[in-house]
Amino acid sequence: DAGVIQSPRHEVTEMGQEVTLRCKPISGHDYLFWYRQTMMRGLELLIYFNNNVPIDDSGMPEDRFSAKMPNASFSTLKIQPSEPRDSAVYFCASRPGTSGIGGELFFGEGSRLTVL
Amino acid sequence: GQQLNQSPQSMFIQEGEDVSMNCTSSSIFNTWLWYKQDPGEGPVLLIALYKAGELTSNGRLTAQFGITRKDSFLNISASIPSDVGIYFCAGPMDSNYQLIWGAGTKLIIKP
Image 1 (cartoon, helix red, strand yellow):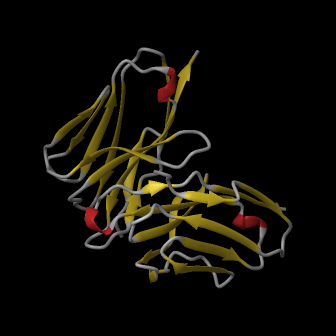
Image 2: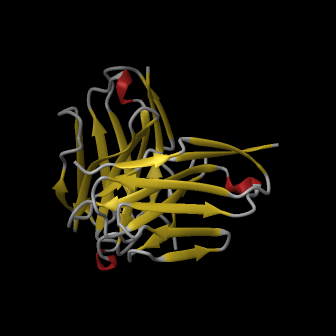
């Protein structure tokens, strides 16, 4: 089975540009998570969805960040406008709803964003 | 709020050496998770612990859930080059599905 698929793997853009990161979770997984990883702050949860519905977006840093999950097999994380401090690796992860609290999260390979 | 303190921050070891790292919290956790992140990849679950005092092995890896439920340990025996990476501890926040993550222990094997 395919794992969590993220695109693009790498993105270099200029400050002020819109960035869209994409994620396809593992089929059948009810939960989808967007994380950001930086050297300074480690892994930070930005937002998570259950059955395509955003449950907690308190980790989204600013209004410039938005996330959607229009269906069970696709999610996007958008940054508009982007700033240099948004440079990070963004991970998408999914898990089945039946695995309970503390169950395994399956991560994608990440999207490395560089904002110049 | 809940926090996980992971140590050491990094380790430089010789191939074949045993490795120990730990994770502590001021709050009680009911589950401890250990993940490994290879360079350029996302974290992958190594071991999950669900019971205080539990000792669980996965090949050369052994993890323990502390009796106080405020700490956990991960040991790697006879390290090999593919063990390099960042090891994270994590635990679920209260009753929801969010995980709290430690800052990670970076393992580097000296040639």
